[in-house]
Length: 129
Image: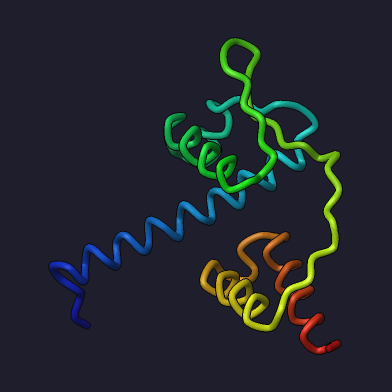
């Protein structure tokens, strides 16, 4: 078996790191949603075996993407997610559903309980139409 070298190896490594980041960010969302209180960046970092800075960057990316995460700095601080928000119904067209399903397939449709649930709902919506 040959292994990629040069640019191919770098691209493969970059893709792997991106996938790991996406998986970690999905897990962070689920942890924050399930947690009854703020979770410290240290606790999140230890649980994911990364640095607090990595967790801070992940949370910032998620916040900029629109995920309702609040980060409180300092002693007694941490991260929370607003679980009181209600989700309005969303109407997707077929290419949008396919894009979401392809993204979930790349992540691994069973990478997390919410990923598996989302994939089932998307597939059911396609079959119901």
